[in-house]
Image (cartoon, rainbow, N blue to C red; front, side, top):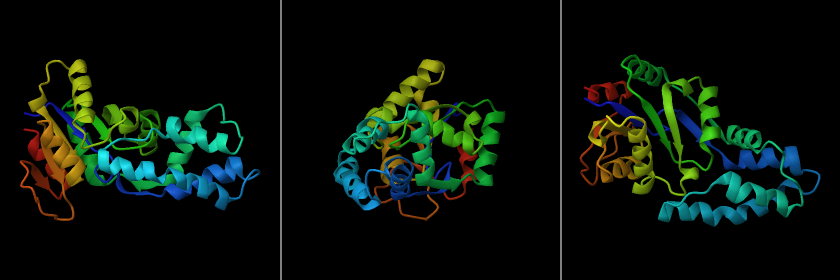
Amino acid sequence: MKRAVIFDLYDTVLKNELFDFLRGVAYVHDNYLSDVCTFEEFKAYTDTFLPLYHQRHIDHSEIHFVKDELPLWFSHFAKTLPESVDDLEYAIMSAMQQGGVSDDVRYVLDALKARDIPMYILSNTIFTSCATKRHLTHHGILHYFEEVYASAEFGVRKPSSRFFEAAIADIQARHPEIKKQEMLFVGNDYAADAHGGVAVGLNTVWYNVEGAPNEQELDIAIVDDFKDVLNFIE
């Protein structure tokens, strides 16, 4: 029996989650920097960070947006960061991301909650767990999850084993009675989630709505209906 479930976030728990970085850039410019530069000037500067975003897909490093990038945006244009950086981060995150929670996901979360199975989020994101939790609160589902692990705070992203192992270690610190082989990991991305989960020895479910092939013949379960996740609990 599986005694804990770790979920990927985007396009797994949150569906049709569109990420538009330019919307966040526009939000910062329009609300904080429009008096010192044009949008074109600001965008040209933010584009200088693009190599960092390309690199993270090669070496699985991660950007901590609030520490690594946002302060430089303001200092470059001789502006002071607002006192509440947490609020600003969440506002930018909200501008960039759009999506929702399907009825099937809510059904599964309710079923697991009813069985007292602790649940966790393991997310590749440039934003902090604090901002991610606020995002989950916005969608009305934060209360299902015992903890949220955001790659920004670990410096690496899935499929990095270091990111997975850090989450597993924290879960076992919370629940010493739960062995790794009693954890289930569910994610939609073949490279990041399926490969990453298998590499650290987690029972892994690939949520594969597109019907893509298991090209490396990984030892994983494959579902295209989210409710089928429950079949792997017992």
